[in-house]
Length: 292
Ligand SMILES: Nc1ncnc2c1ncn2[C@@H]1O[C@H](COP(=O)(O)OP(=O)(O)O)[C@@H](O)[C@H]1O
Ligand SMILES: Cc1ncc(COP(=O)(O)O)c(N)n1
Image 1: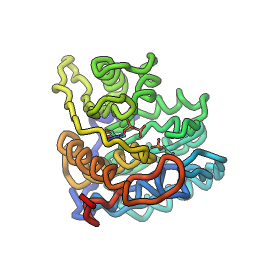
Image 2: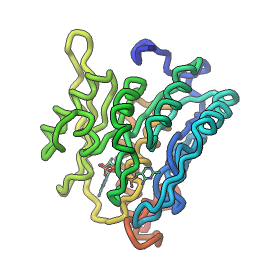
Image 3: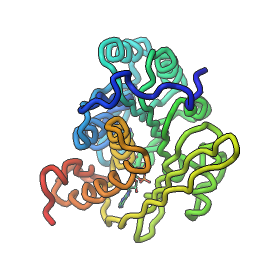
């Protein structure tokens, strides 16, 4: 097993002007979450986006209707087709779904000659409340995490990773994020979107070093946009962070930039008219200009 700290994390050519970033995730045919959201997010952050499908999800803004899992041999064929040809600068992993899918992605990752940056969004449940990770795959997902540089759990996901009840306040969120960061040797962005304060705080926690020292956590606060169009926020944030890391920003530099972008993307949802449930965000608010 390669330890995350010692593994080379960049392509040999250094920071590419337009980095190659791969999403390994499930689909959303309405374009708001999963791979479709990831590709928009890569594009909005100046990266060349690619995608390998783990699961075909029949879902819309109202919920998940069905999930089809292609054979894992075909998943592996997709992964090899990309990595045999393209030098990867960063990889974002989203919905994995089952133990078999997790093991297939892990084997592929462990065999890569170079280590791209790896962001894992530990997707478990959709905004609609539907399960996207089988219950018997939770342990396998936990065992996958040491490969990541950054993981981006929301409040219930962090609780499950920490083996505790969901945090009811920021202090508990920090404690849980520290324990998960130390257990897996990864940076944790604990997302506070599920609290209901007037501000949304995401907390960036680094693992402690061998002497038990760690940098202060980054407290990233933004206004809460009052909208029900929050489908795909988590997918989009993790992809944006992968793209910016591949462009040479640190996590501490990338997170505030992504928060500003997400706030505008949520504010601009008023211009979209997609579906009857939790609508998508407007990934290109900055590029297309907002209404104000
Ligand atoms: N209403 C909101 N206003 C502003 N930012 C939000 C809002 N909801 C979520 N976010 C941001 O979107 C990201 C996703 O947050 P969260 O909802 O906690 O995760 P998930 O989508 O994985 O459930 C975080 O960066 C969070 O700060
Ligand atoms: C394929 C896929 N991956 C992830 C999510 C979670 O997205 P969100 O919780 O933001 O709705 C989703 N709905 N579908």
